[in-house]
Structures are given as C-alpha cells and as structure tokens.
Image (cartoon, rainbow, N blue to C red; front, side, top):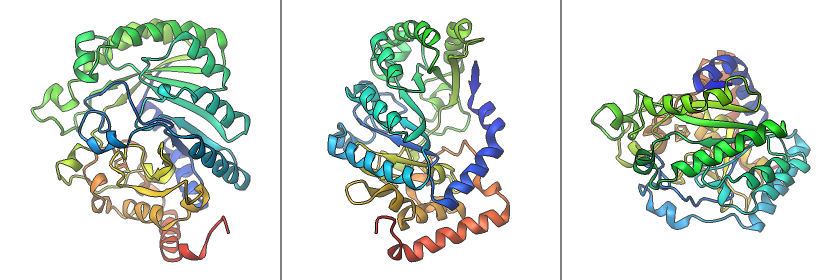
Length: 362
Ligand code: SF4
C-alpha cells in the first residue's frame, strides 16, 4: 500500500479531531512516545538533536535505565487501570531505538501487560538485521517504520552524515519477505516529500529541504513499488520534511496558530523527563518527570494545561520553540465546534487554577 501523510490526514481528519477533543476533556493520552535511548549512529542535517545544532542535547544523551523503565511501567499500569490501554506507544524520540539492546524485551512487556493497543518502532534501519526483525515481531510489535529517504550513497552521506545507504537498503530488502511470511506486523518504508514552506537553509530549491528533493522520493518509490503495491504487510509512506527547531535557535518568530501535538501526545525522554512534544530536544516543553509524578498527574497538571491553552488560543508564539517551529501539518484543533472549544478552554483554565487540589496519586 502507498500512503501519504495528506491522504491519511484527509481520510481520518474528522475522527481524529473528535478523538483529540475527548482525550483532552477526559485527560487521556492518544499516543505515547517512549525514548529508551537518545543516542544516534547518524547525524542527519535536518535533525535538531544530532546535527550539532544543540550540543547540550548530545552531552545529556544516553540510555534509559531500569529504574526509569520500571517507573514508566508502573505509571502505565495506573493509567490503564483507570482508563484503558493507550491507543499507540511509539518507540523513538530523539535517538535511534535499535541501539537499545533491551528494546524487544521492553516491547514484549508492554504488550503482555496490555498497556497499549498498538506499538510502533521508528528507526533509521541501519541495525535492522533479519534476526532483529524476527525478534521484534516475536515481541508482539505491530509496526516498524524505516526512514530510508535517500537511495544515492553520496547524497545519503551528505544528508545523514555517514554512508549507510546500502546497509539500510539491504536490511529493508531482507526484511520484506520476513514481514510477508510472518503476517503479524507491518513494515513502512518512509521517504520525504519536499515542503515549499521550509525556511531553513535559505537560497530556495533543494536548500529549502536540507538537500532532499522530489527525485529522492521518486527513486524510493520506484525501488519498492513492486514489493508494496498490493502487499498487506509492506508499505511505502511519504511525509513532509518539516522545520521543527532551527528558527527557534535563530530567534525568528513565525508561527502562532495551534499545533495538535500537545493535545494528543506525551514524550517520555530516556532520563524520565516528560515533554508535550516529541521534537523537543531543547527541553522547552517539559511538563514533569517520572521520578516525581505519574502520567495521570501530568495529564491534569498546570504545566501541560498552560501549553495547551496557549495553542488553543492561537498564542503559540508565546512559546519560543513553537513560535519558530513549522510543524503545523496535522489536524487544526481550532476547527472544532465552538462549544467543544469552550469546554476545552474551561477545563484547561480550571487545571491551571486548581492543580494543587487534585491528584490521582493521593
Ligand atoms: S509547534 Fe512544533 S515545537 Fe511546538 S508543539 Fe508543535 S511540533 Fe512541537
């Protein structure tokens, strides 16, 4: 199957907005991003974490320890006891998840405890050997998304910092028959479609997209067209390359409209800190830490409510990271009916005013 971000968001936009509204009003999570490792073996030029644009991030990068993982499991068990399994837990964040040797065991634990309906790993594919594919499918994993993006060796090195192009291509080609045989998990081969909105890099043309151009996507499509066109288990998936942080670093304020991400997602960092956004390498949207709070308390907390309220009211330019971030690609929460928006606003205002009086852990 071939999927584009637009096709997906058009088809599910209305349902997604309704899910967003009810999850905010009921204090639930639609997607949890879990970063069990924040190190990476590539240094893509579009990545704020590993391109060198945020050196302080690299100094703090590391693996999630067992105590933090156990805190997360405990917190998830409380959440599931109160509500229901989380619809999606994604293993990625700002590191390469396959650098975590415990990943398959951790996914198996999440699945066996019934903590999420679906699980997904997003990887650069460099370490995706056939034996690891088998191990991940054995763990109960539902989806692996491999960011291939480029199939030309020289360009791959220019954009991603190392020439691992043939390694990734070989890994994908060896993974395809495994997914077809096992019939229980899906493989998504990802590539970018250039955005005409990007402002980073200057100069126009391919510079606007960090050197990635339309022909790179077409080459990926051509290479995997046959393997994916009628497959139930192997898919091509395109997405827009968005400029998620560089304007913030350069002090440019560009965007004030709402972004849906803080309304449906929490990002657990490898050190237990929790952010309202999965692109937050600068710790600008921290809403708590697993060492001191559980997820239920974070969801009713003042910090998260305050970020959400700014976005809801079209004041996201008051948050420097969001003001400089071009990622407004998904559903527009301000298009919800006005009564629903009023209810959401009231519930956020209440949380900001009375967090001290409420705690699920009391
Ligand atoms: S605007 Fe950008 S930084 Fe802010 S929440 Fe959305 S994706 Fe994250």
